[in-house]
Length: 123
Image 1 (cartoon, helix red, strand yellow):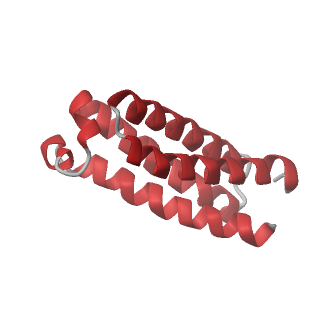
Image 2 (spheres, helix red, strand yellow; image 1 turned 120 degrees about the vertical axis):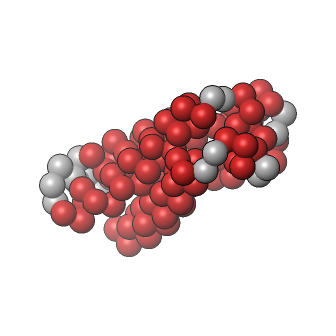
């Protein structure tokens, strides 16, 4: 169980870090080519989502690795799960049903990490 949680943590951290970095550094117009949902948000809102994803990604691995405030790791997983819940609602509202599948998978994986670190293997 320890190994599975660690692998999922690292994979999620990579996915969220890259997604967040993309939202943070690219202009809204360029993101709109691949992500239609950005049309409903301002550039600052998109950057805020990117910052939240990057902070969540770093918090998924860094506290556990350093041993400094390791209780932040499961909280980061919960935060990212909530972010994915918001993404699911956004895609459902816009009728972008294929995008919902990826968000549900990410939500399930972040919930797995949160459950694993809160209940199965408390830090």
